[in-house]
Length: 34
Image (cartoon, rainbow, N blue to C red; front, side, top):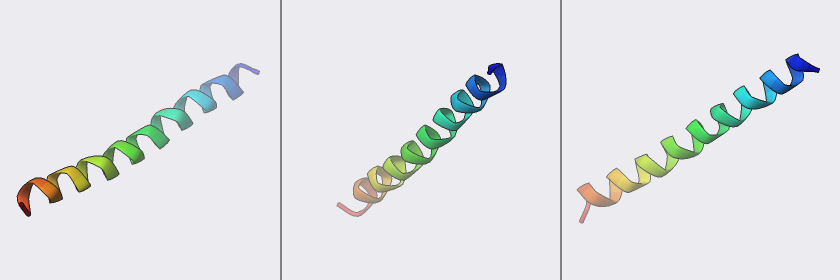
């Protein structure tokens, strides 16, 4: 049970990091191409 909670927390952080990386890439792309 404790292991599941730990895994879920790490998964959320991993997914959010992926999303933020994607957003940052698009943001910088837009800034440098305007």
